[in-house]
Image (cartoon, rainbow, N blue to C red):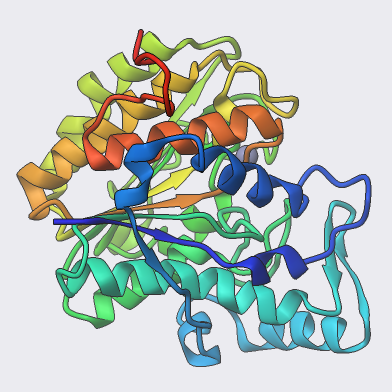
Amino acid sequence: MASGLVTSTTYLNHDTGPFHPEQPRRLRAIVAAMGEYPALCDLLLLEPRAATRAEVERVHDPLYVDDVAELAAAGGGALDVDTPVSAASYEVALLSAGGALTAVEAVLAGKVSNAFVASRPPGHHARPGRGMGFCLFNNIAVAARHARSLGCERVAILDWDVHHGNGTQDAFYSDPSVFFCSMHQAPWYPFTGDADERGAGAGEGTTLNLPLRAGRRTQEYLDLLDETVAPAIAGFQPDLLLVSAGMDIHERDPLGEMRVSAEGFRQMTLRAAEWATELCAGRLVVCLEGGYDLTALAEGSVHILHGLLGLPVAAAGGTSETTP
Ligand SMILES: [Zn+2]
């Protein structure tokens, strides 16, 4: 079955100003790089739909959704010191969350076996009542709730962004139907995600935080996935696997201090795809989160896409780049 790619030029319309690291050029870099890899022609392009307010409010407080809409309608402003909102941002944020919904719908319908969502703004720092850290609406959390509404009893989310996915954790901290695992640099923004944060109430034990010291390399990530994350996700028996894919663990990233190679992203994706095959008929959706070096971001995305296709990375006319 095919692999899908969800993206849209509308995602360029979220204007963060000339000096912000989360900028439209990020998506341009990904799409430009994709053109050099013939295997990616086989991806099924999926046009994102906008999330509805009701879908976003499965995660977010209606008053917060109003705040974002009103700020955008007034021409823009800032949710916090590093989270700008432009006139178009409310609509673009609905389309970014909707991109994750489009991917989930395509995977659950069997239209594609897995999919990558290259959207912006990113989502994993957006808490139910407050946007922060470049994130307006929590795309992956909205997608997990949507999957629940479409019949998935259990959804697992793996977040490998260099920053803790605090917004996603908050959304599901007491929810036993969504397993959330974050591997992140610590201590580092947003300074949450200690190992003893494991969920609460009915959700106790369905949050798994793996804080990591700076400088971790590809093999250390892969070992952690194999030894700790794989058994945890297998024990949860999800019906769908979602990944918050931050490319800011790449060795070139300016906002993180990890040392993951481009090929590391393909290896991590291959593992996620393998778990999905074993546990949930291959159903896997990978959503872009951070990643602020344009070359690293593009390389990481290309490698994730090859991982979803189960292929080595080979550029047009070139030799295989798949070396560990
Ligand atoms: Zn990040």
